[in-house]
Length: 302
Image 1: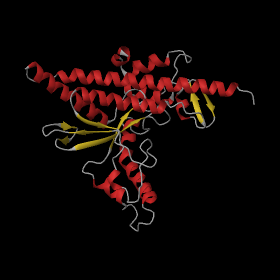
Image 2: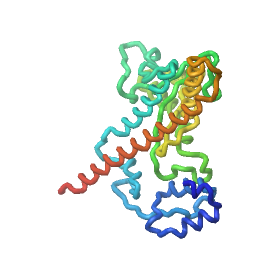
Image 3: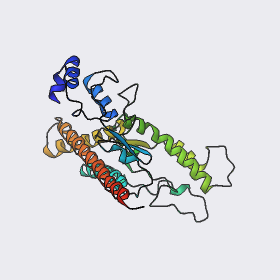
Image 4: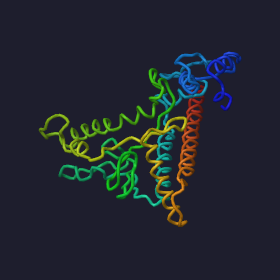
């Protein structure tokens, strides 16, 4: 990594091209990530895709990322567990610094139900809208560009490595950023479907049911907070971690009786490091578990 960081573009290309083809193993998206890290153009060829096969509807690769997208395979529940690990990580970090934090908002739309004994599915988001967590900012606090005195609600997401993980035209537009941007629209679409189910006889203009009006009327709509396959985070997740680290810095200064001296920077670095390890390990567990299932499936007699 240090060698790549110090090398010029020409030296980096020469070094990688001189390696034996069997050594330069890479998925296409990792190749583009490497191009981006080295400051090279898209498709520079500094890394090659050495092997590809398929299983069912998904293409396989030597790193096993295609296993994340195989359909018609018994769900191990590890994808949900990975998501829950991320939300639990944020919860523990937030509570450790005394933040006004609420997790698992199963009653988010409870007062938007029609009369007649309707009940929300508390364990499923199919007939409910369940954001993952929210923060209540104090008057002098800031989270991203939002100042205190408000509540911010988030839906945590995880994205795996797959085709077009990095944008083909702008590598800075990472998959985590694209996934984060879709969350507000996803909530509106989900709200429209719930309005159709819960208020079937209500005559209103399209997209103007009670639940959609509630979602559109929020001062701060539900936002995505995304963690990528390699531990990279979306802008909102970065703001959340920064907010937690800032609270840690203020608490440290208050308890120690000293002025703010940047202690939050080290805490922020540690948060990012631990979240990165959590993501990498979680995806590794998922791929290994699904690989075992596929091997068992393929070895069964017809």
